[in-house]
Amino acid sequence: MNKAKEYIGLVVETLNSLNHEQIQNAAEAFYNTYQQGGNIYVFGNGGSGA
Image (cartoon, rainbow, N blue to C red; front, side, top):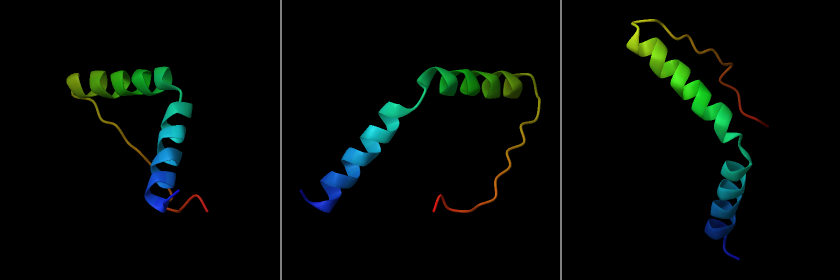
């Protein structure tokens, strides 16, 4: 198997393992906050997962 196909397979596997309901709930909360003129603050350390 070539590297591109292997990588795409891993990406698909990762996406399928996510909790889509939680992602949808977060997206709706962000959108509702935006619609109401609120602020959303997102923090991260900028590091890699390694």
